[in-house]
Image (tube, rainbow, N blue to C red; front, side):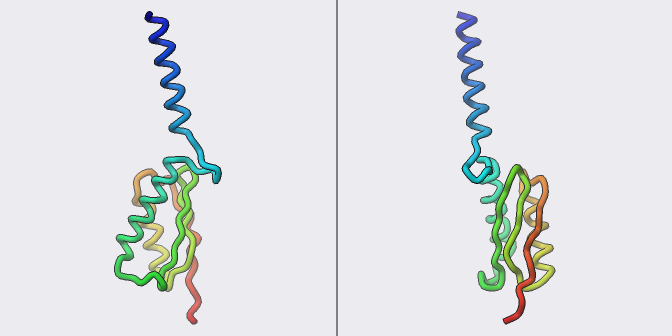
Length: 104
């Protein structure tokens, strides 16, 4: 029985490992999806008063590295977005690709 219990424990551990390391077709993991969602939420909270037309951001995460994209009206918004993203749990680093939007 002890051998059987060990085999069951091994199989459950292997199944858990497969589930935890599950990757989506785009190469991101379940954890990356959670980080992306949390970064979006933190940015929405930080930039709550700004209109969506003044700040257009995208967030992607791969292996804990957050890639920020889009446009912002001013340089301080770009810096602030990176700082907010860095503060989210699980973020290893931030690649800030946000650019200043040219005036119309």
